[in-house]
Length: 431
Image: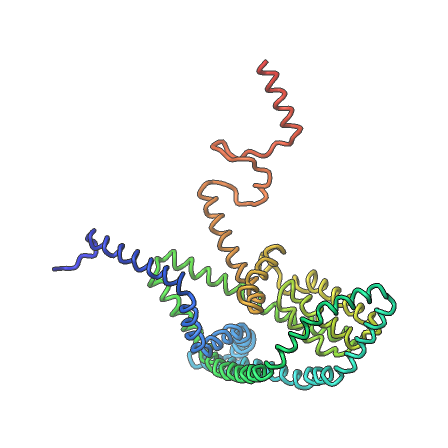
């Protein structure tokens, strides 16, 4: 018997099977999601070096393109070297070497700065912790002596919570062994991540060497699986996603480096303690939009206060400087570098950081804005397409005064005075 896929009974059977399989998959996803999450985590852990390699290659692609298009290809044309497969391979090889050298040099510079500047700062804080705590206690005693009523309130509060504090310390001390074990496992995990990163960097070299081929294969698959118009839309959306991500991330990294340098210059002039450590904190947290400057400034201000609590004006001066630096970044430097790469208002920026930060942690706070920008653009495109089919305007401002829409068109809201006047005239006409 010949199999006929157009037979209605066969189509009914396939539909019933698909519905049954979907129902089983939905049930398993709802009631056994922990197992799914565990298995997905195992797969991602195995593919971690590959994911590191793809991410590294993606971030290094703009550098490679710059080296090839702005340096190597013009140099070949100036030397009158004809375009050929051999020239393309040589240009790609030299471009990858330059890109890899710059990447390794950046990593080396960061590690050197960490070892030479940040580690001594942390060691200094640890070595002087007793004196810092003594300074803080002296400041607290001075405040309590100057404000006896407040001191009495603090004493009552401490008596109230002293028993709870004692129980907490009793629970912490027996857990020292488990804490040491946890720290040891964390060190092993860090070494494991470093090894995956090294393997990923090697993989990224192969990806960069064949990036056009991978792109062509992806387009080939898209045109094979989807209709031509659908594939064109899919490829166009991927290009928009790429521009949004790479524009935002690369611009934010450059912006954060500049802010870190400006912070180091300013804190050095003001004589702020641990200027390098504070500048690194400010620069790293500045990668997180909106909340980043505050996340870096608050612990830095606390550190400055702990170092010298008897001179709180140092902390105040730093807070004013950090606020001025944040305003400069948000209103001048950031728009100059990033431009309107996301197209989101402040409300959507805060909402996206809050949502994706709660979902993915710090990583979500960094990539949440470009991800939401893509979702926002997709929803906007669908809404505009639906409005065009209904012959309605696309401009949001046009709907601010709309009361209702009927077959005659759009009717705006009538002000109260005019509305009362119209009602009065209508009543007179009825009389």
